[in-house]
Image 1 (tube, rainbow, N blue to C red):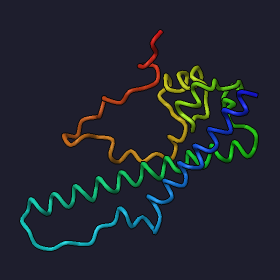
Image 2: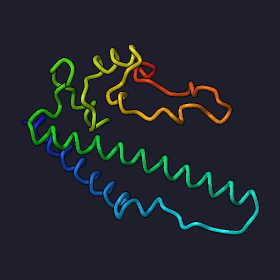
Image 3: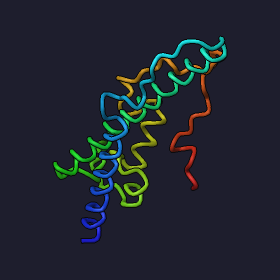
Length: 149
C-alpha cells in the first residue's frame, strides 16, 4: 500500500509540473519571443542575438521536459509507471522520487549510457553540441559518474 500511496503523490507532482510547464510554454511560446529591437551598437545586437539563442534553448529544454512528464502520466494511466522499460523490473521509489520521469532502473540506465545511447537520441538535435570554440563539450555528467559505490 505504501508504494501505491507514493505513486499517487508522484502522479500529483507530475500533474503539477505539467501545469507549470504548460503555463511557461503557453500562448505559442510568447514567453520566449522577443520583439525586434532596432538601434544600439554591435554589442547590443550581439547581446540580443545571444539572449534569443538562450531563450530558444530554454524553450526546447522545457518542451523536452514536458514530453517526458506527459509520457510518465500516460504510463501511470496505463498502469506501467514505475516499471523499467528495458527489464520490466520495478523501479525503486527512491529513484522515482529523484527522477519522476524516469523509464528505466539504474542498472538498465547505466548499461544504456555505457553504449553511448540514450532514450530519444534518435530525434536529438546535435547542431549545438559544440562549444563556441568548435570543441566537443565533455562536461556532461552521466549516471555512472555519480555511482557512490
